[in-house]
Image (cartoon, rainbow, N blue to C red; front, side):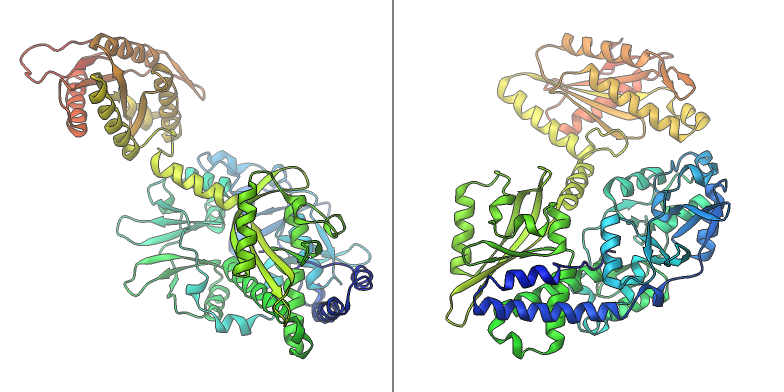
Length: 616
């Protein structure tokens, strides 16, 4: 959880102040006063007051499993690595996700091979605001606090910064229902642990919800993965590693009580259940902080809209306005009525790469990606003119040239005469959110192991193929495949070899058919193929022979050379049936007969069952 950044230097604001009119000077002086007092508040608390002098340490040759056990026993999220009495690296719960959960030998590697080095440091006299900036810039969760002599005095975490911000008043006024996330990834309890950990690492998720067959839920966190590493165990299913049952609260619980429960139970996530007991989402510690900062931003907008009365606002509101502008994780850009940039906050620089002096005096067009046309910006201007605000998704360009998506809200600030004097844009980078949505959408219609279409997408493709064949008077072939000896290979050589085998089979099947055909995995070692626009049955025969030849070639998996064949059942539209489910049943029946032989076979479905169908 990141926290607060420092803003423009006081001298820079004074220089800008000298070039503004009376009204702008009043607003600048107000924000200057608030920023000074906000900074004074943060400077009253230094890291020396909150640093943890007790640190968990180990040597570089310590095994990862042993280090994980130390961290689990102490409930620490990191361990420092020492050599000859000096700290040379750090290993955290997050780093555990990078280990191969399917390989127990990975846990026996020395921690020195996996630690991050060197460890980032900060002066122990730094205030909370400065520390928050460092956490964001360095993209770490832990910093070593050192004195003037470079002596390590302890360790400080992002959580320490959050818990010492004095936000209890705002927490008590808000409820869980205004914050919780209803779109956290959910995986079944029988999903392989290594697959779940890969999902966490790839999507940068700090947790996954786990659904059990009895309808209950658990949660897999970085700490749970660490516990598994400490136990040097590689269980095949995520349900055995997740924390279960999930600790839950109701939507009406105050954020203050929710945070208190998180701290007392030493948790980072809580489930949120409705009155019917059904799980509605997940509340993370970071969600609470993000929501509070959103409240701060809204209060900043109000302060800017009412700037004529800003001097009459309470000192607390002024401190709040300055703290929001300098500290929020969302980028803020303030322009004048002519849309010339007057100020930006540190988060703006963090997101776009542009420093304040590079954009002040220019227009927001410096960020334009070229993806939006003139009509888009015309509609934005109309909404600002008529309604006083605009909100939506927009693609902008960073200083590096990278184009990225952001969620942008623009509000018009008017004076007492109703004239627009400022525009305030508040935005957040939604690159990760869009990537996660795309990944979840893909997983909804594809097999997580092989990447092939799953059952739902397969039926959609089959129905489409039948409709197309009906219009063009073509045939459609359905091929049901079952691997020979797969269970024996899986049981003898292990599930990780079995998974590699299924992935290799998927690749060879895809390479054996046309681009417009469909290869899907129904589950286990069962695959199914749809051949579209088939002119005659002999075309299917050649494809079946090609598949059998491809799968009969040896496969090199790890140190094993594996030979695996397949049995194939084939049904044809419209000869055998015109219904998707019936075609699959026919192909399945034919496959069952083909499997009776001693070697790999394929058979066409024969409804009569009295005559010998064609076989290979």
